[in-house]
Image (cartoon, rainbow, N blue to C red; front, top):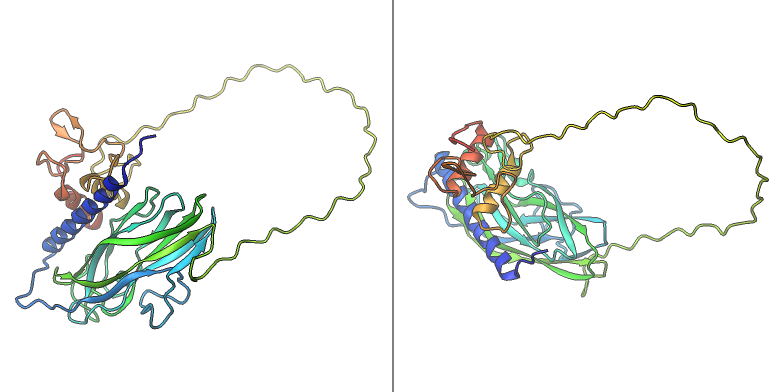
Length: 340
């Protein structure tokens, strides 16, 4: 097995964040978002991780309406839901998109699910398209989502106030000890396409097969119920039976199993499952961001004849513009690419 140096993985996560940010900017431009003459500057004060989702809703102000837990325990094979939240989006800005990278120790936990239908989906008219990871087992999960609705609530689609950005499910692995959970490359955008600055990023910890050091909420280890001691067993005397003689029959010829083949050149289908969805977009974003081995079944970046796999707009390169073409295909059924 090839081991990727941690520094290279970290750089890939940063590259992915930059690509995602560029993609958000491109999409906001396409949908008509423009920078105002006097852009609002109100920041998000706190964006962070809550290790206990109890009581949290899509619009909960974590740390005020509910207590924020900084550590929680998960055992091998068990799952733990955590929330990534922000504490306030100003009413003159509205939230239209976000992206960040969740970093973790892959020997202790994996990411098995991400629910993006939280704050960003609450306003009337919201059309949320997640283009980040929904699963991850390599130590970094790129989490991103964009709302294609326009305007600021209550009449528009961009949400204001506090809330949960994404609910992430972690699954415990065999490793033992405390893993830091950190958010890097944190970016949020308002309804006009301006960057919303974040003052404080609040990281957390997860304890795998161990208790949190210095507090936190510990999930007790399930207690094994002891089986009753075996009592005396009467062994029945076996009754002799005649040996069964099978009746000869003709030999049956098994039906050959058909091997499914990948759909031929379905535009944007990077994982060859016959569908074009956010899973394909995630693969393409990872490749553009430099994540190792993110090539999909189409071998993104390889040359086939006069075409480059993954070059959806036929400009002879694979870059964020191809991801934008794929995103538009998914979001508004606009097959604007030229090939796959």
